[in-house]
Length: 118
Length: 107
Image (cartoon, rainbow over all chains, first blue to last red):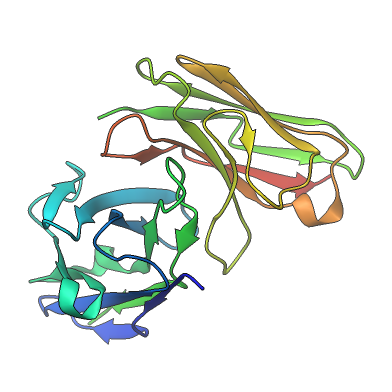
């Protein structure tokens, strides 16, 4: 069974760093892209960026470039999303997701709520 | 990047109604358009991929059409479980983008 299991909810202060994870199982991790999607409270879905775990090729949305880093560890089939300096505006639900079936994102993690507050 | 514009942003409908949501891309994306349904507190679920192909397990009352820049999601005979938010998403380029969403509410 294909699963994307994300790390738990986080509460951080502005300026702190954070790395959240997405552990994949049930398929060949290096074969398919994994991406990250942000959903701010009461708002829509925003595509943040994507990584090819096989070669670590990464692309970022211009809206997030420079503020986040996406990485992957093939040895443990895990993708990461990290911030070096969080802002209050980073408060959101973050989903990892993968298009295993082709074009559409057919597998999603359960989401990780990140709260940034002083 | 490619901008996706959905309309309307929200609509009110009754069980049994036919609902139509449109999505426009800022450039030609051929048929690389997907539709998702999201319910509160849940991850999105793909309904239709490649503009018109129904994802496995999705009821046949959902249908998609269009190509190029203009696309439509239709829900025939709206059911109680269909009240949710719907998003389009282009997969024409790796930097995928979503529409802003359409919330389908009870009339």
